[in-house]
Length: 156
Length: 156
Length: 156
Image 1: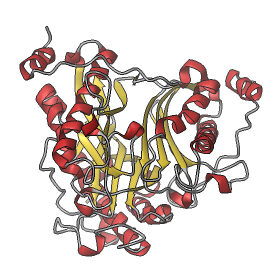
Image 2: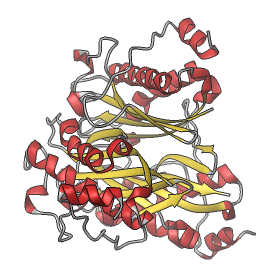
Image 3: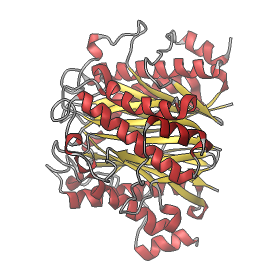
């Protein structure tokens, strides 16, 4: 078992079966040493969005619950990365996370929400998980998700 | 005539003269084997936004019309790509599309709208057109456009 | 003194001490010849957001003031780039700027606002500063900032 798989096990994180888009796009593309992961919404292990992860943060969804949603997005990103490269030990670096937080008009706590994704990445990948990041509040997300996270990785 | 140009002809798609930014940015940048295309809004062949492509999807604009707007954005992306590399047969892969859908507060159908861009890319480029994708609902877009699409390509 | 540092001096621009994220992400990541800079909000030289740069453009903030905020974001991007590569003369090209403008529902002047960042980049880096760009209106930004700008650069 690889080092990253061991860390996942220690953390009690089971990567879900990665979601397959039902359209003309794919969950990841490798180009040279870079893997680009499609935006992952906060689907649960059952492939559905739990009711508490639907809606706008600051109105329907609390910042705390959205933090958990961001963590879930990051877990889904890792599931796609494993599907892309087979062995997570081949991940050299998380280059960038893009965090999209469906936000009520007055919500300004997007950075704290997005820490749910950033922290997970470092818990699992260690130093290689430390990434550049852009976080924005958006007007809405596909299927009514509260959080979406996209990623690029450098791989071996 | 190249393979991709033939497919464009079969599909009845005429790539417009690519829009030139009137500011200190450029429509595309090549770095190594990657071409980054600036966000393209849903300008028509005349270089203007048709009235039906102005406003927020879910309020002023229907999802069906926005689907056509997303397709138009993808056509404009290909026009820029051709300007960047000369011969579209040199496009090795569409790495990523970013889809920005100007959304009314309760609209959650952004993924279906964005399929208008994703489908066009695969119709024209075939397997090379299958891309990673992030789609978000935004509060507004330049000039009041309903859809904007950005792209990166791997080129020969 | 390098060429770019000289130009900064001529322009009277003092790059601030770059902001350090207080979370598990980093201000920049280098991968190969590409440096990805985290989204920079319109913090002033004192590391705070001035009151006039808080809120939504088109409601709380005028387009003119937001143009200044975008310029400030670009200054902060350059401060991070210098921290990343040491000598700004090693910047070969600004590949892309992503501009996020916190927007009131009816605001459509995002492109003009974002010119504040694009112009600064070309004033400082010359031809190497001409970049691909995507500009969108967002529902909100971290800490209530009116503008955020992310960037990628090709470096020597």
